[in-house]
Length: 73
Image (tube, rainbow, N blue to C red; front, side, top):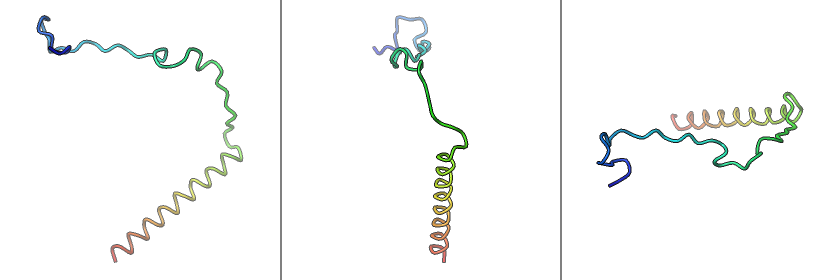
């Protein structure tokens, strides 16, 4: 039979504890030793990106509301 329903065990319906998966199982050794980022909070690049993002959100919301107004007319 299947692994989870072994009738030779006293309680075959109880699940066996799962093995914990660590990062060593799926990542290369030393993957986190040299992590360097050049991200600076509040930098010009970040501010420009935030302006673009919020402009997109506002335009999308305005188009959605306009579409609802036209559709519900």
